[in-house]
Amino acid sequence: MNERIRLQQERRATQWIGAAAIAYGLLFSLSNLFSEFLLPAERPSGEITRLGLFVVYVGAYGLGAFALVPALRALDRVYRERGTIARAGSIGLRVAAAGAALHALFALLYLVTAAATGEAAEALFLVFALGFLLLIAGSITAAVSIIRVRVEPLLGALLLGTAVAAVVTIATPAPIHDAALFLFAGGWIAIGLVL
Image (cartoon, rainbow, N blue to C red; front, top):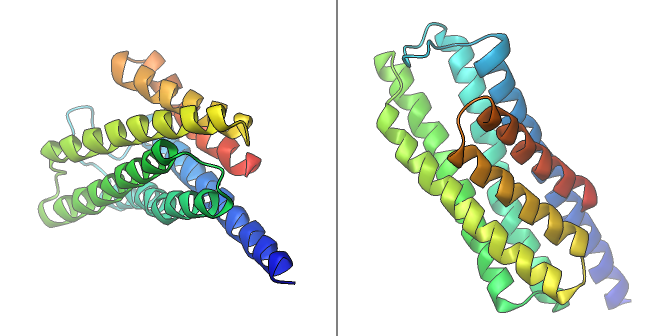
């Protein structure tokens, strides 16, 4: 009886984790799509032209990043309880969660500075960059561990692909950069669907 309850709780947790990963990917891609291509809220110089839209775009992204933090921590907990993740993979998921937390912090601080001054503080992109690096490093570490354990190799491959898309985002100019951002977001949606 206890095993059945544990499996039900694990299934509910995994569904919630999947929903959070999907939310992160969707909010990231929609925020990027609208803010960069469909209805920009700032000029290429960084000057905010539509504060209301800017708040919506950055707020949506921040909410997605915020949802990803407990989801990655919960995924780590589920795998540790099952005994299906190596220590390195567990650390990788926690590092990725720290990266997502930095992205949520970036969004919050970016919004506050924009609302207070009418301009977003560009220096805050250092927080974003550090968060991105932690997401990459954590995802690669967790992915390799998950693939090696051979319990959920598709999930490991998706984490690895998402990390590669993030690296391409950092290393290339537009339009490849923009396409890689959408692949990064799509990777998180796929991770959520697999879970």
